[in-house]
Image (cartoon, rainbow, N blue to C red; front, side, top):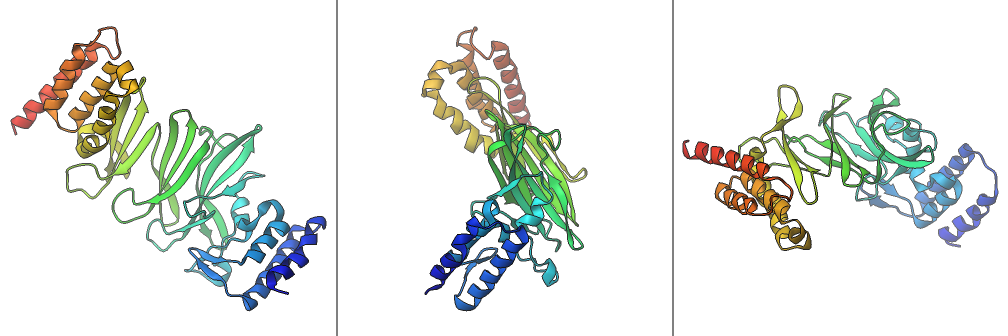
Length: 350
């Protein structure tokens, strides 16, 4: 009898047996030890994947916790006892009934990280829980305090804190936000139609800090300026009306250690390569034909932030010829025209 058949014969009756949680885990551990001596296991990004028989057994034995309850993560800088973090340990820090969910494109439930390149290992997870009968989503980053786990950061939605409720889709992305070689976590969650909460979290010396937080329709992070600075910038899109968006660029404040609003013209490359094409594509679309004044104003402002002042003035003048009753009002075009003229003169006088 091969191992898969043996596992099936051994464990299939367990769904009918009332075992304690510890008994189930003991049985599971024995199976895994037996399998490790009889069949090679294949490598996985953060550990080892048991064979198909073990996976099937875990689903039957552990019930709702499933395979992820024993998905362990190597902790290479400590003793053997501290070498693994299980889902069950993280669940102890979460609301009753919470379930961990995949937190990256690889399907990992626990991400093992060294965010500050300081030797302190952190673990990040996404989870779901129920509050007042509504399924909510959240995220948590934990670290070690001796032999125990401690919460370094957590998105606290309804029932946990004052932050807005998050629904799918959500993501937990590891990214060098500052552009300085360290790793940060970008948490994104949808809080409503056309609205997403975004937080950037950094960890240093066992402590977490939120570097940036916003609720916007879209957020992009990258090096969009023309300066030689290594620091990235953040660009937010907030819906105005129809196809129009308000933009805000944020730059890193080294003194205050946070992202602060800066002039949109500081991210000229972003507006040239991302926003200008967005509005140009709308020009001949159904939306563009329904709201030509909005599209014209959006394109004019995008050209302005991109530093293409001649094209910006062309769009402004075209917009002023459209109906006065359409949005945005002509006063907005006049204000933008004045800004373009001032910036163009300043550029010529350098």
